Length: 282
View 1 (tube, rainbow, N blue to C red):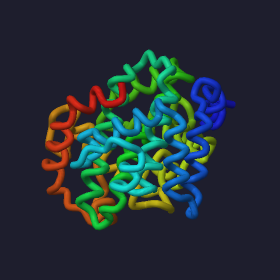
View 2 (cartoon, rainbow, N blue to C red; view 1 turned 30 degrees about the vertical axis):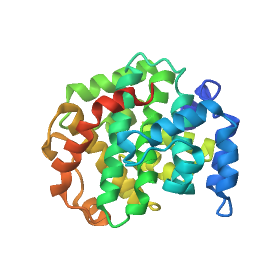
View 3 (cartoon, rainbow, N blue to C red; view 1 turned 135 degrees about the horizontal axis):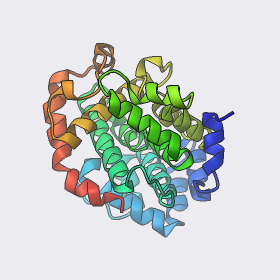
View 4 (cartoon, rainbow, N blue to C red; view 1 turned 90 degrees about the horizontal axis):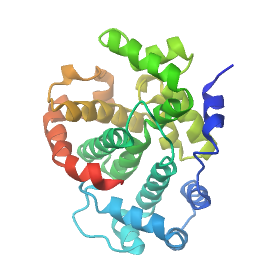
């Protein structure tokens, strides 16, 4: 029987988390970890260091000052933010070798980066501005379960896309996935997050971003990423009309303390970042 966990098992050899990322996860889950420990760990990996600084200096990440060293990133962003960015960069790099015939990697990561930028913009406007960097990485990684499905189950994934295309107004992607696979890309993302022992907020967003009202923990994070996902879709089709995206429950606006009237401003902001986003993770 195919399950979300068995799909993750199928690709675990191809999508392996580097040892440095596993150690970063342990630091992320350790409230007693220090800035010095984090810096020493990151600088041991030159490629990770370069990618981290590139992401930290991207317009989507929202920093106004140039960051040239890991220690500077920790000073300006904080330990938690740098841990999360390092995890995001490493996770994205881990998928570089996955061929996905149903979507180009550029299209996939463009949407993911738009969602990340939107999540950060929304968090900054919310009552929890300190969650901005966490929201950025949670938005970046929210859909990796879909990428795994495209790689592991291409025929079933093709049928899912065709089923959704036949009646996009009635059936969501998740409903099509459940009908054909018996589980969703969110279940796969959640299974991967558990396998990698990612921080709890990331796990919740990967599992529940498409069904945010089912989340029982980290509900704010999940709500932000769900709204950000919808706004990323609007940015991709160059629309400011919420009716062109998946419906957003009023309960999510209440939970985040945000007003739907912020949508045009957020979508316009991330659209302006699109050119930078397309080259950000190459």
